[in-house]
Length: 177
Image (cartoon, rainbow, N blue to C red; front, top):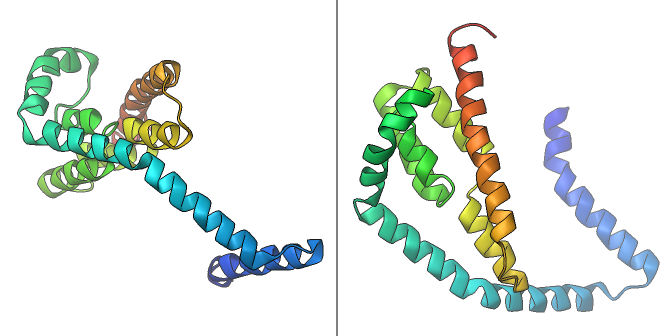
């Protein structure tokens, strides 16, 4: 029953929108074309921001900066109880979703999906956001240039989420949940 509902929800939404537009007397084709024009304008406006973030991610992953950050932060992360296997994911995830997915793939293939690093990587990947990409995309599309408060709040919440992920996965992995 749930499969039928999940398969039919999108066509049902389209039909409801068309019926609502018909009842309100809206020219649906013209409204669709206008929306497509606005979408194209938005795409063109955010293109420089997207190119900039993809180039920056490519430079970061291609350089040895990630390895240097991991070596620099490893004494602190050891003290805080953050597994060293997760550190590359914690550094890449706010920047690049595809890069983070590659790191998760490496962690799971090396340690296994049922290992502690595999479990933490999977939970972290599923419960965090690519902060810089999202800010670039959304703020770039509406022309906001001052995003420092949003960035600070997003980074603080991301750091907290790392600790909560490790805590909950530690309790789950050790059989305490």
